[in-house]
Length: 498
Image 1: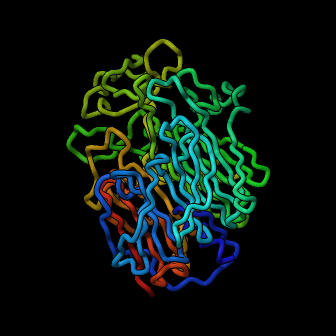
Image 2: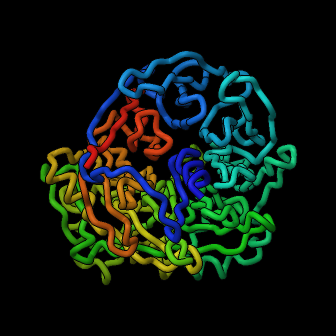
Image 3: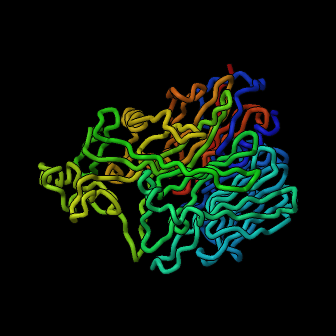
């Protein structure tokens, strides 16, 4: 039991967890994390995603500053990390994600032309020798191992070309490790005839000329502790897909709906031009549009944790977003439209142009902005929303004095990464906040009622959030590894012992 739990947590910071068994963990204080080590590996774009191998005590890091490569760090002493080697990937494409299991490093690599199929490359974590290359779908954006090490799963985003003339299918590839890395790539073609019904349920399908299968863009994956089920975020589509790994079939699509920012506890700061950090109710909806996803299981119920970043489509041939200040309002619904268009009100807020004109007369009856500025918990069987942090993340960041008002018109604190792990006798969620350079810690032992613990300052634009459990850690204590793409800095945090 312990072995597979560690593999989940180390495979890519997006963990499954089974709370039905009770492994013994060192006594640690989950609200006492502090920085114990830091390394700068090369400036902007240098530290994106990390993966840890407990066998070699090496940390593998995606580095996109020059020729695309994977840096290999000696992590035997996190207080004095050092680069000892690298794996050059530049001739093959761009590495987007890494995962480790049983001494094997898996790298998700997009093709030189990212509308072409990408690949997964397997390396030995000790010798760094290449073991296998496996073809997957277009633009593999995230990779993870199943808990038992039997499967590697990739979310293949399938983004269109800038002129939108080439829009590959969004897909999910399932690689059977024990079967000589055989692969099956799943697409969403079976849903093409259900476009109207899916839209009625709240799914966003809106790319120019795109079928459902083309429009779905898988972003991030989490796998259940029993290695039977995977869930994949469809960020632009505001949905989650459920996949049966045993039958290798898509078994459900969960539309996530919208968050009502006119409710007081959901209030946001919609303007970067008002000069104040104030959360207020506004007549706008937020699309959850989750990026990263993690899961834990308690008494047979899978709980899905999402960080609701938001993401507009922006291409040369199609730009989805507009500022409220330049749109036409329905004058009956929005009788105060001139006031709302002021920059200090909603004028600077970015909204989608793909919905909101409910009667088709060319003006907006409803406003939908990108992201929910929160993290949420969903029932993995039904898609039901069980918890949302409302505007607590932004309240905590404002109270800490590190809020970035320049991002108020976009996606606020921009929650992007998440990892789950046991610290002491608690299950902790580590929520990465890209635009304020911080990680928020929550006690999620009761997933229906997460409790805030602390804020940690990170490098610029934290991207990778990796938890290393104490019993696999080189220090014998829990470790949080945060890699930041804005400045190439990797920081390591650890809690105090009790």
